[in-house]
Image (cartoon, rainbow, N blue to C red):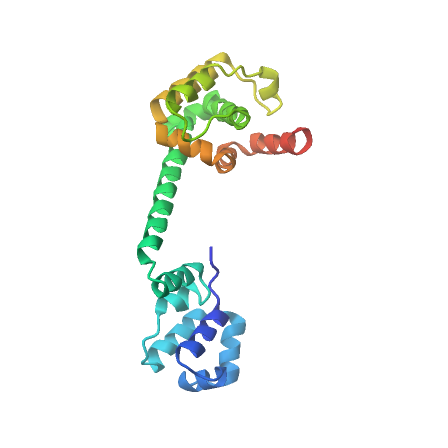
Length: 236
């Protein structure tokens, strides 16, 4: 995420208003150069914006002040306009939004493994069913990384379910992650995949395996997350 930076905002104002230096900007803002320098030092963007709104009539972009003179979004927008590529940029942004929407939906489906309601989550805390399923899913994704299954594979859903059904998980292998996996956990995971994962979700999971694994770890209890990290660090 781009960090709000008063120094960049000041630089933008000097250039946008065709000024020679910050001393001229300070004069326009009706403040001393030292006061402007102090705003930069304290990163007081709110005060700077207030001064701009009060003392400068020019068409200054508040977005650029807030989000930064060197923001990648603004640079991309500027380049697109200069090169008449607005439509191309719009397609890129739409694809990005679509992919993030799919990822959010996938994460929501993973979160459901531990239940949606308070009582379902409480039940999972007591039984540990959801926790074991998440560890098993994590273990399966490690296995998935070693296969040749691609997001664009024909009949992806069929082949994905076949891989999961044929996955011969080792109880000792999952035990090193701190949990004892049961046969019923694999059946529960298979049912979850059939009920919750459509082809788009499977494709997203395959294309974003590192991010998906990271998210699964974030859903585990701290002790299990720590155990997985230790195993990966010293035994992978």
